[in-house]
Every structure is written in structure tokens, then in C-alpha cells.
Length: 397
Image (cartoon, helix red, strand yellow):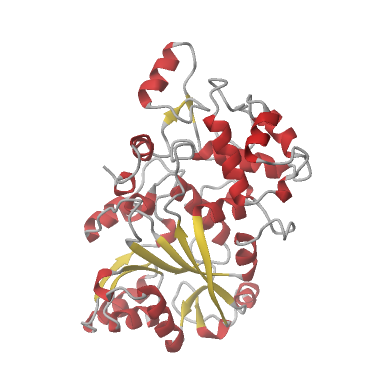
């Protein structure tokens, strides 16, 4: 059994094992595999849920990056590296904390972590950095393993056959990484600098992985420590108090994780490299200009209580659809959305969650969406609680 399923109630454990590509009957929030089969024999057709389409993912699948044409950032300041090492290791004994470092480049942070005695797995996609990173093993205080792989490209969601170098299961097995129960502490911490061009895609893909307990989240509540741009930071942490920034991404990430702002770091603390490993001075000037921006360092820790009896890896995609549908018409009252989304009586639902029927989406906080969804899932008024149209644009066939 996957580690993420350990420590969860039986139905949630089953849902974790089912994975993102499982077959189910829409609306059967509390169903088991036996229930699905029984209902199919009763005349209900089986429906294969696909990842919901999002404009940020564009038409091309997530894994189809066009090479590393865009420059990348790496930690250059030794002072910053020492501070980051202290933050990542915290008060735990360094040898007990496993750090996955994404594209460390010249290895300034890698060296600081090793000197502190940490266990580090460096995922580096650029071959030119590999020899130097491996040479850092001389700092015997810590333990280092180097993997030639782009961490952000692992486990593509829209590809039938995943090459071993892109499979977290294969890589983690080779590294000897074991799964931990979801209800346990944080077994692994990830550090990375979110790429400018594909940052939003990565955030969406990671959301799907987190809610489905897939990819790295098979191994438990993996903590993400990321440098993000001001634009992404503002959207991730936006609330109804900032309606211009508040969006689906804000709701889903704030529900999934405790997002903690650590500090803002000036752009001068980073170096910029291109695919050949050298600082670019003449090409991609627009991209380089965007890199001369301060970055926000945030810690995103998956919530132990994210999954409940009525929101689980089994039905998370229906929840995603509900939130996306609501934000499609921000100014419409919530009762109007419920009437088009669910067969459950909307007035009764809103009364239970103590929401004003005339309230709009921009008056609802992330937790309100979860309570609304769980209340509908808890209802036993109908077999099919949710209304789905297979032709909806936000379901990618």
C-alpha cells in the first residue's frame, strides 16, 4: 500500500490506491469499487474522469517543454544559502531530514546543506553541472545523491508511457525513499525556484498530484519550499479582500496547504544561466529583464486534515470542477451556481453552511468552498448529487 494511504480511514485509503485515472460514477462521493459495479449493473454507465482542462495548461501537454531556451535562476549568495539551510533543517537532526533540491546548478545551497550534515538528493537537468555537484560529496558531514532529471517534469499527467527518468516511483525506489503515512509528519522537504515561464503550469500540475495523492505525494505530506515571483505569490495568497487577484488557484492551494511567507530575496542573490551553463548577456533580453525581480520565499505544507470522509482523492476532481464553475461567473449569486451544479436543494445546502443565498463567489473564503462541497456530498437525497455535461469545455477528452 502506498505510504500516503497509510493512516487514512479505509475509504480514503481505497481512494488513494485508485489513483487519478480511476473509473467512477460521478457524484458517488462515498462509493467503493463494489458500489460502482453494482450501480453499473443497475443501468448507470461508467464514466472515465480525465484531468480537468485549465487555460494555464494550454493545449500542449505539461511534459512538452521546448527545451531549456529560457534562462534559469540559481542561488548564488552564500549568506542566503546558509539561511536557507537553517530554515530547511529547522530543529531536526540534519541526518534525519531528507531534502530534495531542484536544479541546484552550481550547488551553492547544496554545499551549505552538506556542511550542515543534511541528506540531499540533487535533481539537476543540466549535464554541465553534474560533475561539480558530484564533487561536493567530499563534504562528508552530509550525504549527497545526484540525479540527472528535471524534478518539475517528473510524472507527466497526459502521457500513457512514462520513461523511467521521469517516474518518481522508479527514481524514489532507486534512492531507497520509503512512503510515510499522510497523517504523520513531513518526511521530505523540496526546495526549488519556480521557473518564470512554466511556473503556473507547475503549480496546477502539483495541485492535481497533491489532491490525488499521486507522484511525490504518494510518499506522504511533502513540504514545498519555493521561490516564486511577486505575481504568483500575490495570487497564491489572495483572499476575497483582493478580488482582482482571487481565483481558483488561490482557493485550491490555500485549502491544500498551510502557506507561510518566509521572506523576500533581492534578485542579486541569484545567478542566471542558460542551457549551456553560462551567464547570457546578449540573447533573451526580455527574459533576463524579468529575472531582475525580487523573489518571495514561501513554505507550503500539505494540511494533515485536508482529506475528510467527503473530500478525498476519490472525488477531488468533482470539487475542482465546482470551484472552477463558480469562478466562471464571479458576479453570479452562489444559489445560481448550485442550481446548475447539483440536484440537491440549494436553499437547504446554503442554510446548513450558513451562507447568504445572494452572496457571490468573491464573498466566499477557501474554507467556505470546502464546507459547501462536503455538505452536498453528505446529502443522501439523490444518487447523483452533481450535474455533469460531458461537453463542458473544462473537461479535456
